[in-house]
Length: 492
Image (cartoon, rainbow, N blue to C red; front, side, top):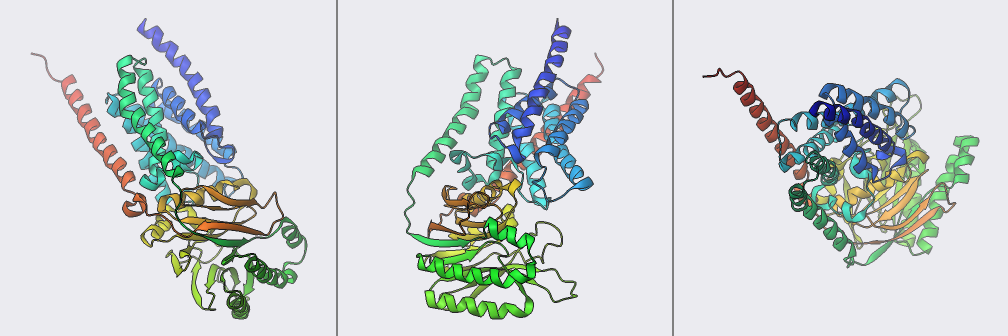
């Protein structure tokens, strides 16, 4: 009867695999459904529990690779062999956590064992994000849109959200293994259910608290679809001066509409090195006359026949016409795109709070942007440039950095979703490049941010998960050694 039951479960496991495989197409990437991030790991764990570890692992790697090929198409700036290799390695790293769960739960029992899978997942996620040239782009925390849950990011960083998602899958499988016995359900309720509910209740309470802060009107300047099409069908050089002057005119329009701070989308100004100072002087004249702060995102072209990359930067001018700072893009989207900045966030103090800037892809790197919390930056103004497949996803990725570090943010995005968010991740205003011809987005942004636990303690939660996993690994090895010793112990 036991053998028959096992065979039946093995056959059923392929149904679990099918459900998990289908869910993977909505787990992440271009067709994200937040619930799929919960469903997929539940059934993939279930499948592997009834398979030989290596065989099940290889099947999950294949399933993940196939789904990755489709869901990340167009969302990664790469193609050909390199694209297939990267999507394969993504599947391998994720699948390793399922293999770890399968191996460890053979020896480690009890409700504490449910923490192994989420801790291993956070460990793998931490290694991936720390070494990946794409940063946190693609991490599971960015698949979630429920703001009460995402408030957890202000305490634990994205690691807490990833842990909670995977713990849900692990706890359900533990209950499943124990046939949902009443005593086990009670244990799961107290150990998992109560903390989960408290996190959601606290998140909802944080969202409902009013933000006691005055606001400042910030104007972010973009390009229209018509302008983009015109640039693509006309000699680019002949339009550069026209576009540059258009930015200055839009600064004047924004000032007349009450904007105190104005900046543009990434590389909205394109200039050769010898013309930069002249353009800056024109912008200073407007800043002084209209008493506004102006942020100028510049694509600075190197001299002819130079081997240098273009400079991708934003320069800030005060209402007094002073140069406040210039910051370069620290994380190019692809090799050779531009020079690499020094990775130091810069800011200026104003009557409207402490204001800093980073450029586009920089916002995908929690370690880089974590400087803002230590600097007590209130508002981040972010020039960006996306493409249709990653819009609006990429702007919401950037908003997670604001929740982590307690700053408000405006992101002006070429070929994407321009938006402003408060430090809770709540949307203030937005426009979509593909759905509007509006060039200027106005945002009334709180001038004060909020200190967060994550900004004070950093990645402590990830390290707690790593320490726990290593500790359980020691216990696992010790138990295995003891069992092996008992097995070969001579009988009396």
